[in-house]
Length: 400
Image (cartoon, rainbow, N blue to C red; front, side, top):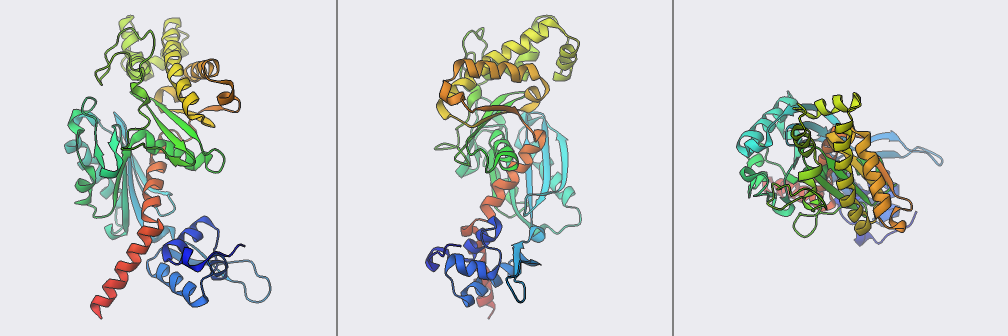
């Protein structure tokens, strides 16, 4: 195991990173990897134990004599509250420090009722899911919303799509009830993070997630990390125009955006215009299963237009995997097949040589997984851990 300069890994936060990654799980390992002295290693481990972030667990392999004690992340040492909002449904959960779901619920919501209605409902659900668990265990909150988000500011920026959410800084609202770090991101970004971490981590570091549901959006994983862009607007694939869209006005004010002609909302609108009595996508599913030719034509046409836009994204980003998720993509195989066909026909040979195009394996749970990892990456980062340790030290000194 390579030895690193002590100065490079001199903090408790860095030691926790080594323990979480499995790179160093005993005191001896930490010393060898970091070059820290035994007293220095002992100090950092003690700080992590006092913070409730690690525990001494099962015994490690012995090379002779007494086996060393292993150090592992204390998953039960805290909780994170997470929620993934869609246009009409929300997944809400409480997770431990390993990202495992402790309790969860699904809510019916109308996100266009605005934050004054939706956020209190979500926060009340978190309180109910916590049950008898003390709020003091909560270490962070993560929320995904179906809007463009200025990530650093935690502010929604979507005036022409969801006016009631425009310019709303959500973290301060949630922090009034749960005074911990609160992170906000676009709903498809957190879904992309979840799908990548749970299914493709270590296998594909470049992934394009396309959500086809009431609306259309995308999340981009580049080099293993979510790509948000300069302000958080990366991935707005739904507002790329298509050819032969029929002149449909999009919510954003432009004409023939793929969101306005190929989403679940667009499919329902087109079928109604053709005389079909369809209220929800379940009605469309019934027509497809019944072999209705006109419905199949509408779905395939939506797939063609979506495929053209995704093909451009494939040429631009060269992902290893394109994952199609959301109600529409997960329900209709013809949608997935149609998108796949257009991508291979319109993208470059090199970009599609090893490209995999798959349906989501996590389904609705992807947003919960992604929100949990988004929060954990923040609150368990070396910087955040070191800050917590330093605050604890200052508190002790102030009492002395």
